[in-house]
Amino acid sequence: MAYDPSNIFARILRGEIPCQRLYEDHWALAFRDIHPQAPHHVLVIPKGAYVSFADFAAEASAEEIVGFTRAVGLVAGQLGLEAGGYRLLANHGPDSHQEVPHYHVHILGGRPLGPLVLRPAPAA
Image (cartoon, rainbow, N blue to C red; front, side, top):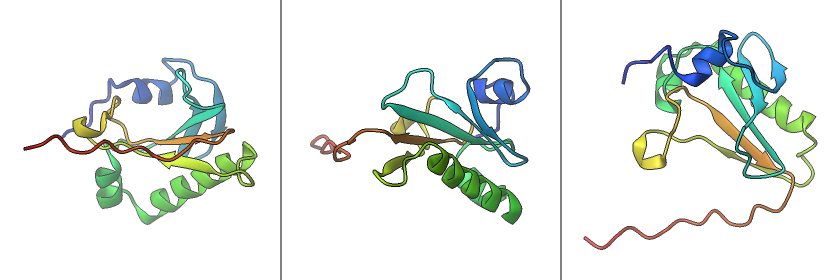
């Protein structure tokens, strides 16, 4: 899938759409999700044009991967989530319900999240 520069995260990166920024550096931007699923629900996006984790892992430079990964950890720490724990989530493609075709990681925490409930596959 080709990267679409008109996606909402690309527009946020260009400053065309506002967001509640929590962190920004050369590699990543972190901001609050507009439909939070936990007391702390933050999205961390790389500044490069990557559609998914697979795209990011295959095409990003080592510096981008390290910078982005460190940004995710730094944001979780700044939110005070280390002691109680948190969940990282990244969706890939339509079966996972990826809504924005720009690689991003959700940081969720601030309360017990419970087990990740996976539904059984439908019978064939």
